[in-house]
Image (cartoon, rainbow, N blue to C red; front, side, top):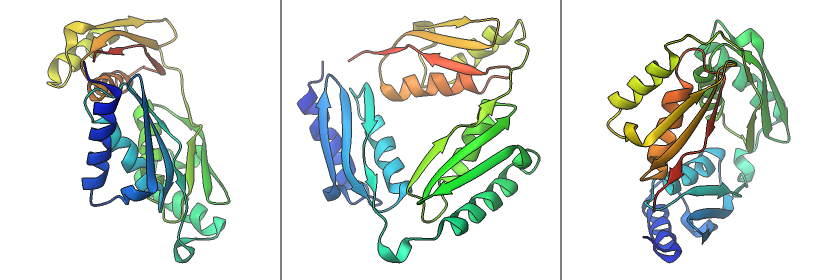
Length: 218
């Protein structure tokens, strides 16, 4: 079993060795495997990168990202410019659904709203706008339309688990409600594997929401 100190040291080392991050501006704390990130980053991308690096460390069961984005003066942009670039990026990434997506920017903080057909599209929009220059924060309030859940949906998710070498499929239990809500339970050996399982379930056609109750064994 890995101690909080072991995790703290490993997360700190991973952040220091990542060439894209200025780790000296990031403070760490670990309690029962949950890592809290604090301090500040010079871009929204750096903030997200620090979170991704942390999740990949063995023994991490959760991440609370409290890093604040403090843009250098030369990188700050007016809200209308950020909004226009975000809208253009969405139109290029999802041309058939961009009309259903609304972008709101206030003080560099961007909020997405609207409706898409699949959860994978919601994730794609977020990933697209996260690259917009001058962004300080991002909230994804896009809704996913409700679809009829096919009888074979559970089998599709189970098959996706089996095909993914990163997932111990026999350790995960899948429950499906009539409204398309998926509940994952069981246990896996890492935070990364837990995320792989949730992502595989979200990408199955007909899924509206995934509740991830999978435990991470330490």
